[in-house]
Amino acid sequence: MLREEALKAVYPRLKDQVVVTIMGAVAVELYNLGHQPNFFYLEHGMGLASSMGLGLAVSLPNERVTVLDGDGSVLMNLGSLSTLARYRPPNLIHWIFDNESLLSVGGFPTATGTGTDLAGIAEKAGAEHVALADTIEAAEQAFAEASEREGLSVIVSKVEPIGPASFAMDIGLLENRFEFARHVQGLERP
Amino acid sequence: MPVSVKNSEFLFAALKSAGITLLSALPETWLVHVMQMAEDDPDMTLIRLNKEEEGVGISSGAHLAGRKSAMLMQNHGLLTSVNGIVSVAQLYRIPLLMVISYRGEMGERDPWQTEGGRVTEPLLQSLGIMYRKLSDPATVAHEVQQAQTLAESSLRPVALLLTRDLMWEE
Image (cartoon, rainbow over all chains, first blue to last red; front, side, top):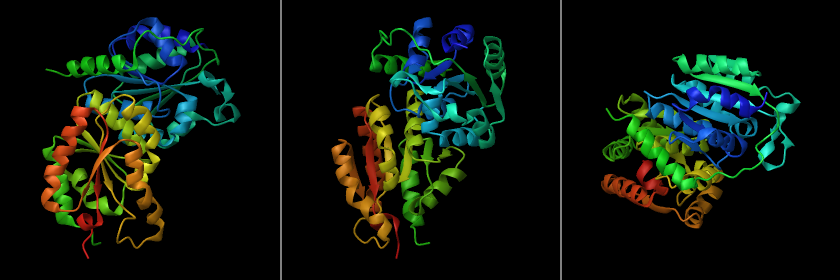
């Protein structure tokens, strides 16, 4: 499955959620589908997108928060899978795209290519709802269920190590940060 | 355990007065009372971390959502959080309040704390992080408020170093 196609399939739901992506291909592909003020692209700080998602989810209890993560980033902060499972915010979706590669920095293979099982780690860390979704149909279904569920959802999808032709995004890093903050703070006002 | 309960109470009350409703923390001897107070207080959310750098992400998410938070950690936790501080909090202009127990400074008896103590202030200086050392319980509330004010106006991390004189009674 191509990550880009999976994102396209779930975009109608995603566009109304508070979304945090990691840097690189995932950010660009979501941006190219149509930027929204509720999308935040974490362009550095590898591993911390899931921690940001936790901070957002516990602070925005009425919003659905989705983190679009990757194998390289998750492997850098495996403890976060345990922290997320410990606090299991009911409005948080942690979707990990596993291309077994550090694609955005040259395609070096990661440990998921030699057997490390991120879904297995998430499950044993205590996450209740862990789904494998390696086809578009499975991804749509898993994301729909996760979006309707009151409970932390982890989705792991094996995807091709293919990224966008260009990594250019016509939005400044701080522009994104301030627009996102203003937008999500407005969401919670009564 | 001769960690000062009274001064821990001052610190916790000061954090609450500064509007902080979320604390992320990793257990550390000097911080046990503050963490327990946070756990017992229904108006405070405590997130116990596996590694301190996670707290940078959590506080950054909370800030973007409009919530005031702080990280509670030992200075060795600061050392392990450096990339998050630089690549998330400083890059994205997050007013990150870091409340740090300052181990390995004058009076330290544990040899294993001493290297961390030696590099803590030079590290904060090299990162350009404004900080204060807290020793006098009478100034804790004021210093916490001042630190939070600077963090919010500068949109940058700010650190408070909790000294042995403040946290330890013997």
